[in-house]
Length: 83
Image (cartoon, rainbow, N blue to C red; front, side, top):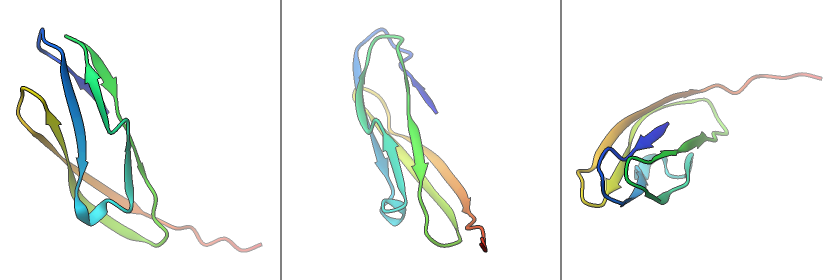
């Protein structure tokens, strides 16, 4: 996803991953500065070792702004492979 600073001021953000999925989901970069009208791509990686459905949220703390909370939904499928 892309986070864009719509203001004319420098700001800093931090990604907060819900406690229930913090061992399954990582974000990169987790905190970074944003220049005025700048953009930052944030990459989320989901790593599961068993089939499951994730229905949670990710929050963004933005200095000088409001906290954004976005839903995070995923269906982890583990293929069965025989050799």
